[in-house]
Figure 1 (tube, rainbow, N blue to C red):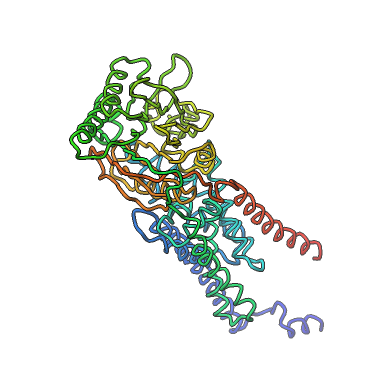
Figure 2 (cartoon, rainbow, N blue to C red; figure 1 turned 90 degrees about the vertical axis):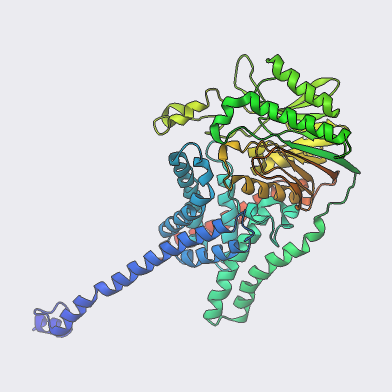
Length: 538
C-alpha cells in the first residue's frame, strides 16, 4: 500500500512512462546551452582584450579602452571567482600578446609568449577580484580599484615588475589624461576603468528598468570620470615659469637593425659624434639655433670612455665642437662587479663630470634572473654575458643652468623613478632610450605615448633622444612639437619652457594608489565577510 502511494506521488516510478523518457532526453539541452554561454563569454573576454590593445598607440583610439572594459565587465559580472580568473586570463592574452609582440623581434617567440602569459596571469587575478566585487552595491567603484590593484602588482612583481600596458599609457590623447597631473597614472587608470565598468552597469540597469537611485549611480560612474578629466585641464600648463632653454636631442641611428648593432659599437658612437658635429656646423652657418645643452640616447656609446681612450677622444671632440654640455649615454665597465648603464654629463671644458646610473634594470634584457633555468628555453640569454647593476639615486644634471633629470628608457614606465627625479629638482625630463633591438615595431610608439603621459603628470618638457627612433620633444601639456623618423640620423632643436612648480601628482606621490588599493581590499573583504556570514547562517 505504501509503495503504491509513493509511486502515485511521483517518486521513483517502477516503470518509466513516455513523459519521463522525454524529460530525460531533454536534460542535455540546458547543459549545451550553458556550455554555449561559457564559450561565448570566453570569446568575448578575448575580444575585450584585443579591443584594449587597439586602444593603444600608434592608433589614436583611446576611447576604445572604456568600451573594452565594458565588454569585459559583461563577461565577469556575477561570475564565480574561478570563472573570473579564467576570463580575465583570456582577456589578458587578447591584450598582451599583440601589445608585447615586439619583445620577440630578435629572440623568437618563446620569450614573447612567456612574458605575455605571465603578465596575463595578473590580469586573470584582476578578473577574479572583479567577479567577486561585482555582487556589491556600487560595484564599478570597487572593480575599478581592483583593476588598479592588478596594475600595481604587475608594476612590482616578479623581478621588480613590468608596468607596460597600464591603462594610463594608452590615454595620451584622451579626455581623461589631465587626471595624471592630479593623481598620477593610478588615478588615470582608475578613471578609465570606472568609466568602462560604469558604462556596462548603466546599460544593464537600464534594461532592467531600475529605480531612479540605481540609474543615477550607474550614470554617475560614467559621467564623473569624464567630467573630472575635463575639470583637471587647468592643471596642465606649459608656461615658462623659469624662462626657456634651447635643447637639442641627437639621433645618430644604427648601422643595422636588431642585436647586430651591438657588434658595431664604434659605428654607433661615430654616428652620434658625426651628427653632433654636423649640428655644430649648422649652428655656425646659421641653419640652426645654438642649443644650451644636448642630450644623446641611451647606449649611444657602448664603448666605455673611461677605459677606452679612442671613445673618450671621439666624444670629447663632438662636445667641444658644439660647445655646450652634453649628456652621453654610455656603458661603463668597472673592473669588478656589474656593468653600469650610465648617463655622463660631459662639459666642453672640464670633460666628464657628473654621472647617473640607471636604477630600473630590465630583467631578461639588461640582467638575466635564473640564467641557467632560462637557458633551457632560449640560448639568447647568453647574449647578455655580464649583467648590469642598478644605481641608487636620481640624476639631475645642471646643464647650463637648467636642471635636466635623467630617466633612462625602461624607467619611464615606473611612477617612482620619474617622480623622484622631478622631486630632486628636474625642470626638464630627459628619457634617453635605445630601441634599436626592436626594429620597426610599435614599441617605440608605445614608449613615446608613455613619455607624453609623464609630461602631463609632472608638467615638464620631456626630451626623448633615441638611437634609431622615434626621438621627440614633448611639451608639458603632452603635445609633441618635434619628432624624427625611425632609423634616420637627425637632430631636433627646440626652445622649451623650464618649470619648477610641482603638480598635485608630484606632491602626493603614491597616496592615490594606496587609497585605491585600500578600496579594492575593502570591496574584496566585504564580499568575503558576507560569504562567511552566509555559511554560518546555513
